[in-house]
Length: 323
Image (cartoon, rainbow, N blue to C red; front, top):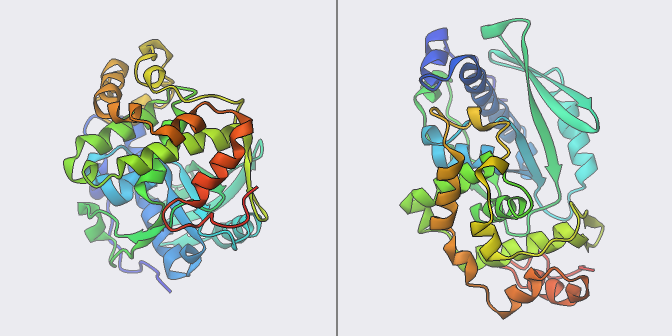
């Protein structure tokens, strides 16, 4: 079992891992970022990552951006496949890490208003517990894969090599962020989407046709829900259509949800610049094919079209049991 007994992280290493000019919030984010590495490595070593995959902004930072990306404080997971019970897995996860001590960190779990949080206490700030949101979602529509965490200087102080971790495909991560931006303007999603497309090697690897299809499907399922056997994706909001022109252009900088913009990067990006980036990098979202356009209208009567499109996604993970 992994112990990190040879780790040798000092206050100086924490300071160097903190973004220049990040201040106290940046230092807190740096400590949480390291604690996440320790926890993910432990979960992989304990075989918990066979049943779950990491997604969201933390996955983008860990597996793609490294030091170039923003710190992401949340831990968002999906169960790995439709045979894994979500509630049971979440309960086992919470039971495993509540009270867990790894290296300089002690983890706890708490619940508030039906949301779970992981508490992270460390020798660097004794008595102070940093909290990060914990979320579990149904299995990803595309087959997850294992990726290495992007090397950072701080990793040399861990005393052990970090294992590969199971994660959702980047197109599915992006589609969920684009779908969320169809109803709001969250700074963290705008930042992540722009960062991906600003990095040519990653941007060139993106299957744009697949991404467009996933976007309209995510928005439709968020509107009306979908079953696959015993798995249920609950409706996340009132029905909404996907209009690429509106998505690209109808966004006021004053409407950008900037509650977390200070933690994105140093210096903080301007909402105007992030909006312009979306318009520049995501113009291909206009190129909807006939099936995309039908699904984008977000009409409940088109469920059969949605089911067929879901069943035909690469890997055919949703080929059976949809209704």
